[in-house]
Length: 430
Ligand SMILES: *Cc1c(COP(=O)(O)O)cnc(C)c1O
Image (cartoon, rainbow, N blue to C red):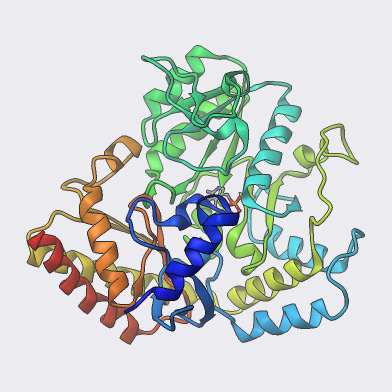
């Protein structure tokens, strides 16, 4: 494979866009090399500007559950676009998509659309604070909830549960209300509640996909629910990634625990920029114009984006057994990676939830962010590069999740496993 045009494109981009990309992970920083610039996608395949073809396990970081340029979604988008791109006035498409989502989840009566997952979470947290009249929130290390100020938090010094900004530009005053707990560790949450009585909400990825794929244990979620109830704290499931991915009902299809609020994104937009936050009618009634909590958006509920989401969700609902096939392919892929690693005596652990898969170059199963960080990043980077050179496009960081799309065939999975054997051999020889 040659990457000449991508190298040129990256240089040109870097002159006018910081790092040449509009979202940092895309720059391939943690695996090295030049990111291929993409020209088009077709089903499970991506084609870069040099004409290289890849089997795409990134799927735009989750949204494309039907693969690239799905004909039904494409048709819905084109037909809607012909009627105008945006009105800044209500459309029936918003109601239709809201109904599709709300009808799937217990405890959720209403939702509001925004244009990204970041916005969905930021708005949900404002609403949780407004509804409870409290300022403090708890999040978990390694969970990602978008790039809003209060959520760009890392562990502070020593044993304190209050976080410190993880990025320059975020005033400590804006993160001092964010407490940090450890994923799958209920003691760490209890410690947060000890340090602060006044906690508005706990936000969690019930199937974490942003520290690699690390699912929450059922006992942990149950205990978390109990703690929230004891303290009058709202439990928010951030299902921006896991929604319509971990199962048709997202992570909530896999746990008996019910959240008070849910955030969505990615799949609900079918590849267009859409986010949403949802809760009971009582909580949502606190939102402007019904209630006092302000939230707004010029392009929120954009008709073209709604049409893409609606086509996607209707297709999913019409075919609920789809997830069985997606999960089987994900399991087959991870069994293949495991066997390829075992053959070279390379430590590897794998995880699957529905159409989501993850693997760590690690001796032990990973339950939280600290354990995730114990992975062999060098081995991952080399494996990634080798797979790419064999036409397999994996997420370019050890802390991301992979996705199976409905466009993927058994043959593609087999081809990927063959590439994994060859790539593991190179990792073993390094
Ligand atoms: C992707 C993601 C976000 C942020 O969504 P954007 O659309 O990138 O702003 C928030 N939460 C989770 C769990 C995500 O995976």
